[in-house]
Image (cartoon, rainbow, N blue to C red; front, side):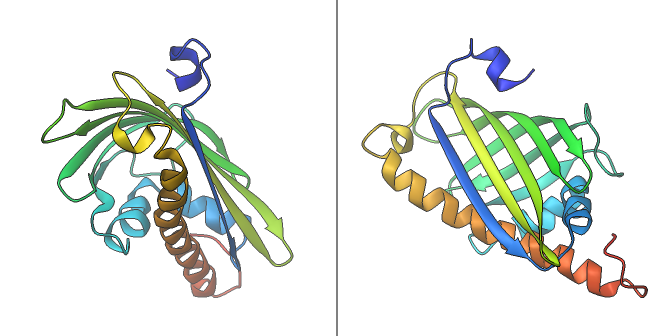
Length: 189
């Protein structure tokens, strides 16, 4: 179910946008995005913030396509764990990749937080490389946590993109390394 369908067309409580340049081709970036296991590398192992990163991923071992489902768990702010169930809703090679997520954030001193996320990546050719864009829309389902209250949203809009940008730079670096590894110069994974 897409978040916008399940929230009675309510606007998201917050939208985060990040973009990073890359010397990799759009196809090379897409190949990393569609390889769900790579997410454990660029948003997990290589994440500079060990308190906000992926820990596990279960999904298709091949390139993800529309309709594929996957699940993941991760660390959030150190003491909290998120458990996500996602479905791929966009898979346009070399151009876009997106998935909708039903998430549960397991909190120690508050009830678990349920939220829906729309995660969208766009890839645009830029000279010999690309620009990778990411948009995340958030719909809280059972309550609004402190970091999404109106007075805290400006800080959240600064802090969250910083963490996401570092992970996206990791993604771009993986795609660039894959492109350099191709003997014929093709940027494929």
